[in-house]
Image 1: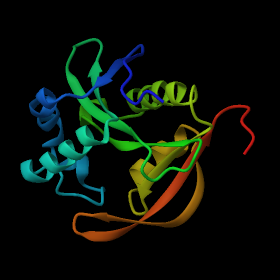
Image 2 (image 1 turned 120 degrees about the vertical axis):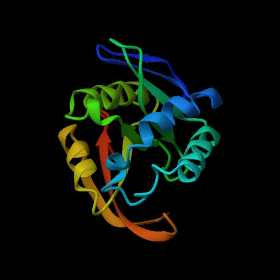
Image 3 (image 1 turned 90 degrees about the vertical axis):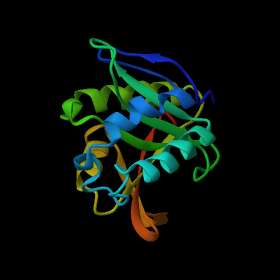
Image 4 (image 1 turned 135 degrees about the horizontal axis):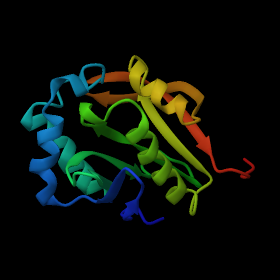
Length: 174
């Protein structure tokens, strides 16, 4: 699967992230309210975000989201295979500027990413911090179903319970 596509929607575009995107992405991510309910709630701090950004680039699947109307960088998401099984990919590490909260932008971002992923895989996973109700509801809004409560991830220096959601490719039999 090509984890570095260029995807174009009505509201936003997604393109591969590059080292030069740090400043624009950090300008968005430096808002503490974005991370308020996230397990890594200090990701708005420059050194913490730098690690997040570097890990995203190293993953080979980090995408930058731009608002089509203004051209402004509004956030990021990524594809990753590290925790997925054969025939699956994980979508996650998503954040959006609060000015673009409310569903339309996140829904389009995920629709573009899902459509692209389903050309190559039969299932997309979303691993969300168990207490991150905002992100859990967002995944449920786009059709994610709860698979498991059995995943622990190291975040912000501690183990955090995550719930695992999935969306299956239409017509795929698993």
